[in-house]
Image (cartoon, rainbow over all chains, first blue to last red; front, side, top):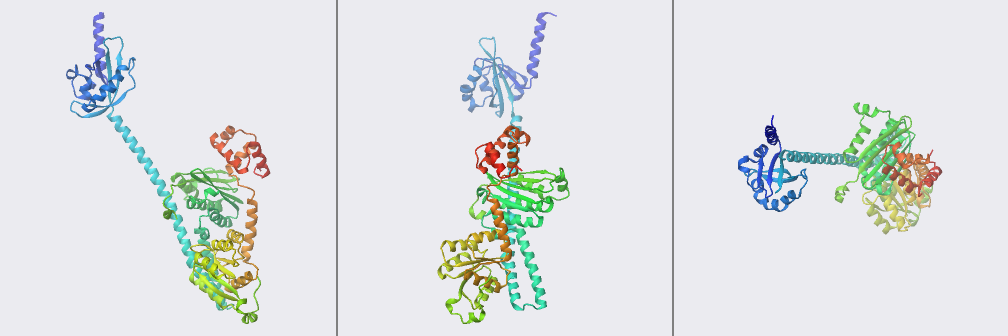
Length: 363
Length: 227
């Protein structure tokens, strides 16, 4: 086969490559006039190669209102690119024959060894890419909005529960219990020593004790004035009595008065867990402030939690510990359990300090 | 509990001999019962009553009773806060506190703030009146449970005076330091970042009041934190 015909084949091959390319390929002279316009360019912009060739590219595919900026800012950058490989693509808005616009990436390179220069431009329609990017962005925003909303909901739920406990405890303590105590005193004075009275007296004492226990389990009512240390102490004392362990409570002063309700709620769950399951002889409760977090640590020297136990417990509906940790995570904090069987368990919960709301809302 | 006089002597007692008592409780039924009991006692004289801490404090300043019987939990100011204010005013009024829950922590705080008595609201009214008389005569009136709780609380607090407690993680880090491990080494062993280990180390130094590792280990040993 002759060299001539090989060259012809080579030309056809190049034409086939150009026309088969997915990207638009456009060749221009040094004044920006179109010399080549491949199939993809025809499809993308709606011009036939015949229409396009000889027309200045900026007039052909740049929207009129962007044309001036294109000539002053974009073209010089393309001309400056002397390399053989296209420079970093620029994102531009282009226009089709019908006047509609589309986002494109454009890279231009000067074809080497030709003078006056010829430029090859590669134009990619990035409508789909843009759409995907926007969708991803929208989705990730939606996810973070959802996570935030979930955190706020869980935190409101915990606060609402804590405040409800507080209110019920107050009503029981401030009214029902006081009436019973007064009645008890009346009965003591009324007819001491008579058998029926003594029975009533015992019944009343039993009721007072039960009510006192119920109030204590709900909320430490006598420690309501922003003193986390004593409130935690009251909760710890109660669980220490039922769980048969000794305890220490340590609250760093700057950790008190910020997220007390959430700390109390978490501590109550954790201590009740220690009392029910740990068979501990000692338990330490430490609350510390770490930047914008309040860290609660409840450590015991009890039987520990065997590996995998938490998961089976969760399946069996014993959700105390797991749900505390889940709640901490949901409100943007964290929770972690480390346990050595036979040596005890340490639970760390961190609670993010929320933006201060209006004073009457926080009370 | 002492100081209760012979009733026969009380009947003939002059007005100025009687103990002037102020009662503050936010529950009307309970307060009325106490007010009646105080009024009926020949050795006591009721000078006033209040249903909240603020009114109580103002009335105590004005009436200067010998003894103020205060409920711990009250709206406005609670019993302990009224107690604190009364003591700050260097008033001659002695304070006897009442609460529905006897609590060792509250007992400790009450005594520390200068209360002369702390009784359960479940106690018979005559018992509470005896307490008032005892306090007026320079004595004290503490429920037996309160005395036990107070002893425990004092012991616990004394133990707690030894300085801030290290968290279990900090103790773990301190033990590894004592065993001669470097910070990066510790980080690897307990699966933490070196930065976190360093911040634990700093917290340990701060809590123990030391500046560096060797001193932290020495102080940790002294306090028995490395056992």
